[in-house]
Amino acid sequence: MTEQAPLNSLYQQLILEHYRHPKNKSDLPDKTVEVRMHNPVCGDEIQLQLKVEGDEIKSAHFAGQGCSISQASVSMMTSLLVGRKLADADALAARFTELMHGNASAASDKALGDLRALQGVAKFPVRIKCALLGFDALLEALKQSGHSGHGKIP
Amino acid sequence: MSPGSLAVSPSKVAPSALDAAVLRRDFPILDQMVNGHSLAYLDNAATTQKPLPVLAALESYYRHDNANVHRGIHELSRRATVAYEEARIRIARFIGAPHASELIFTRGTTEGINLMAWSWGLEFLKEGDEIILTAMEHHSNVVPWQLVARRTGAKLRWLEIDSEGRLAIDVLPKLLSKRTKLVTFTHVSNVLGTVNPVADIVRTVKQGSDAIVLIDGAQAVPHLPVDVAALGCDAYAFSGHKMCGPTGIGALWARKSLLESMPPFHGGGEMIRVVEREGSTWADLPHKFEAGTPDISGAIGLGAAVDYLTQVGMPAIAHHEKELLAYALGRLAEVKGFRPLGPSDLSQRSGVISFTLGDAHPHDISTILDSEGVAVRAGHHCAQLIMRCYGLPATTRASFYFYNTTQDVDRLVAGLHVVRGIFG
Image (cartoon, rainbow over all chains, first blue to last red; front, side, top):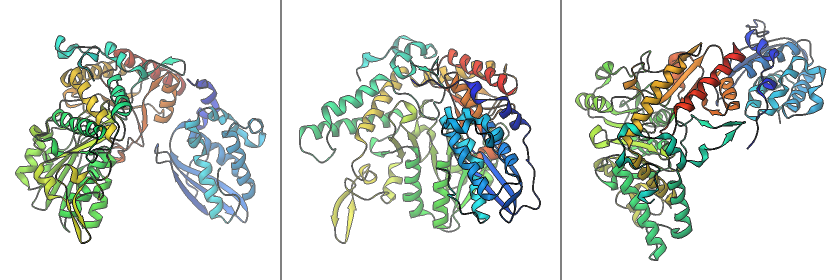
């Protein structure tokens, strides 16, 4: 028998706050790239829109619907992307993936900002893909914007 | 399975007196702790648990009788063949099939429908022909027909559902014509729980067209007495694992004349009479449609499952689930924001409750219920067409079987209060 982690480690107030009042959830008229990511298992869906100039992300918005984890994750993510170089955004995705895999140093990495509130997801393996949906979209958007990083969440 | 191995002797009890608490002893898997709580398993529309007699039949077959069927002259092969074919006879009888040779073993409902699509569909559908299906269908009764329609030039036409999740049967006569070659629909909806009036629909189809009728019985055979002859349909597919049998086994029943008119689905051993370089001739029914070594243990396990269900009694099972449904809908109405899908008239539905709960997403609901030891399903339930009808991306679904009790329902209600506590 496996014991599930306590629920309050998953449903942090900050997550519920982003779920109820998502940041950057509106259309971005001057977007340069748009990626739609869909989780066919649960129907969660995200359209990530970025405005990229040169190698810098000027704005990041999204649309979509899904569970609190997927929506909070993408809301937090977009807040962190503005002003970042494409390579930095790629590094953020990699760091967040480490967090989802239970990496303790990532959990105290200030670079992850509000995303650290999602560290409890690591203890709920079936929900990790929810948290990574927005980052899947981000990596595809980076690729389409000409960034050739590792380009794949392991 | 020995007749005395059941926890309840149905001959001594009225159909309404099924004792779920006692029957649960036949399902050791239900007696376990999950996340610190005793398990409340309410995901029976996805798959059901297996009673001890089914587990015993599987073990006994592999311990004592395992051999390939229909080809060995030796004793074990004879025993395996007899057990496999006797299972076919009992399963055929369980669904009211006139002849056991009309029952084809498949991997499940999906393969049964695909058999119809690729064998009957490719042979008989032509450009301009029409297939009528419904907005209520599981993807397994949609996608095969889309594929075959693309290959043959046949057109798909859709029977819609109303706001309570009932088929718009009044419209059906207008959809029927001499172009209609197939009408196919589910007996019981896996999302809405709607029990469709199959016999009435078949009558309408036969009056208005020469179409054959194929029924998806995956959610019906486990829960209601089913008699395919009385329903009047031409073909009927169902799965073993949703009715106490093993995964990987199911059956397609179809009228003998229909099966005889159809070419084989898969080619290989077992399904031929004579193979020559220029071509081959086919074995008699049902073997024409059973190429290769079949799932012998699966068939035997499903045979044991129908014996078990027969002893519990299908009328008693249907009655128990109906009572549980009424109790559940009453108790769930107490939960603020709870909104069920499906018919409000309980006589038109089975023990499936899909619902939404305020702005809590089904995935979150399912995770929270799991933390309380309550197993439900979250998502589109392989029925995206229904979700689209209601403008919902997903729902949470609780689905009952005869071994569920009012305590399981109480646990669900308590779990939803926990959800409310987190999501407000």
